Amino acid sequence: MTAVNHCFVPVTFEMDVSHVVNIEPSVSFPMLVTLEPEQKRDLVSFRHMDKSKSYDLKVLPFTPHAGRKLPEHDLTARYQWPFGGDVPRKLTQGVGGKQTHLANARYSFDFGMPVGSPVVAARDGVVYQVLDGFGKGGFSKRYMFRSNTVRVLHDDGTTAAYAHLLKGIPVKPGQVLRAGDLLGRSGESGYAGSPHLHFHVNGPYGSTQSNGVLPTIPILFVGDLVPEEGKKYGPFGAK
Image 1: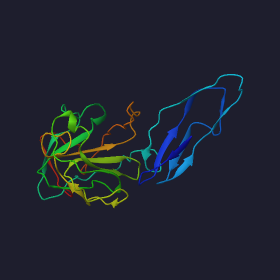
Image 2: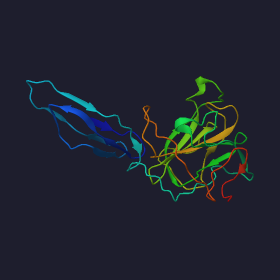
Image 3: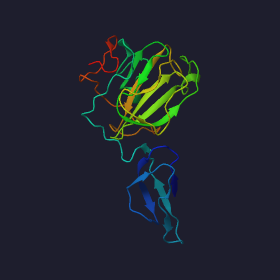
Image 4: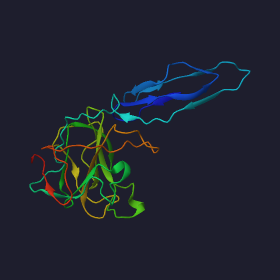
């Protein structure tokens, strides 16, 4: 079994097997695997032990995670407000918002703001994915996966998503960001009914779901705040 990492950052995953019958693996399980960018690696081979008998093997589902370790959220981390400018912005949908912040997306935050408002890094990290080139969106299933989005890897293995951006994102995968660095402009691309910034952090709490997506996790902003719907916050640097 061979794996290749075509990402701009390292990826790590834990691999395990179950229901092993008449098969001998070349390594011990579970195994923790880290692949550097563009690295190709032979992970494991299996030997059919008694060829006069049948064999069976099941590899358990696994999800690669950006970074050199599995996510372990730094509970001392405090996130800056992920937008610039000189005025506060209203939180239009927060934790457990009934429109779209359900299930895996529960711990998400939507800040309403005009198209073109600066979106900045809420925490130091490395850009590991950029989705760009989509135009205006709307509340239709055809826009569900058409959000201009930047995803940033933090040093604890968690990742932040900045979504519904204006096309023409200025950052590239592999780029190092410091909190406050510009990473895009607000828009309404993808599944969005009005211009806003969707922000969330994915991390380790709970198990990965059947679709391989890590859940959003509870976070605290500067001042130990969890923003509440209808109230105004920010911009970057505001306490």
